[in-house]
Amino acid sequence: GSQIKSFSRMLLRKGMVDFIASDAHNTAHRPPLLSRAYKETANFLNKKEAKKLFFDNPLAVIENKEIQR
Image (cartoon, rainbow, N blue to C red):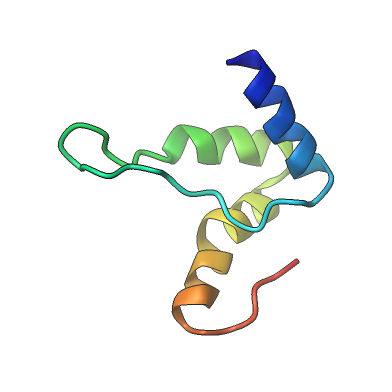
């Protein structure tokens, strides 16, 4: 809803978010579709920040590297 959207944007604006991911537990009933979230994040922040939150930082964790702040 609008309250969680406002809260999430505040966290993003303050740099308090390191990752954006899905809580999908079942690809058939709740597929992890993040394209809309990526677009909204890129529009709200910028494409570079969105790429960091959706791709670069998650990959860094998989590769046991430091995440970008």
